[in-house]
Structures are given as C-alpha cells and as structure tokens.
Length: 156
Image 1: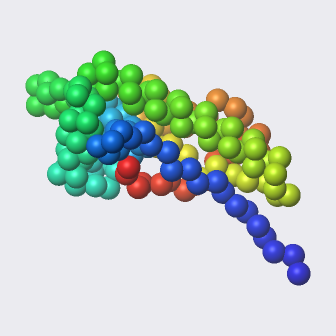
Image 2: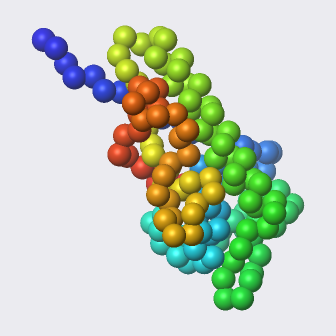
C-alpha cells in the first residue's frame, strides 16, 4: 500500500534572555506589519490578534531589550531604527535557518520535505502591494524552497 507522504518542516525559533522572549517570528511579523500599515491596531488585526495582545508583546520585548522598537508618529506608529534592524535581521536569519534545515531534510529523508509557511510579509514590502511576495530568493521550482499555502499565525 502506497501512502501519500507530504511532510513539511516546522521550525519555532526565537531569541530569549533570562527574562523571556526577545523576538520570534510572530513579533518580527508584527513589526513588519506596523511598518507596512503605520498602525498597531491594523497590524494586530491583520495577524488575527487583539490590539492589547500586540501592544503587550511590543512592550514586553522593549522592556527586555532596553530599547524602543516603535515610536508614536502622528496618529500611528513607526519602527525605530532598532526595530527595523531587529525585524529584518530576524526574518533573514529565520529564512536562512529554514533553508539549511530543508536542505538537510532532503539529504536525510526519502521524500521531499516542504517548508511549512509562506511569510505573509516581505523584508521590504512595497507600498502598493503589501505582502505580495515571500522573502524566498530561490525559484519555486526548487523542491527545497517550494512553499505550501499554510501560514502559521502563532505569535512568539
């Protein structure tokens, strides 16, 4: 009996210190959405979380890091330079770790292993097409980088 095996890799990566989580994929996505929308409320809604939960994640990370990630500007929010660097750095690091893990999975398993998620944010989202393309640089025909349609909304 032949079974259809289509595994996908799941990575849950974050950086923490002795006080708790500093940044994970959820916080990085939240920061990227704040950059895109200029609004914490809209960023939270787009990720399916409450404003209170989003602000709590930002406030906690800022407290643990000792630096501001966002600042109020007009009626909305913008990322600080540190917030920009942290979000972009995390997303690039996560992408690279996932690529390497996928390559290793291809070596060790007898079937193709797919990435779990397509990031709903790009590293530098265009103003006219928010979240139009994931940050993958390899062609989608490459079995190591072929995305599934699943998006993990879990926030770290």
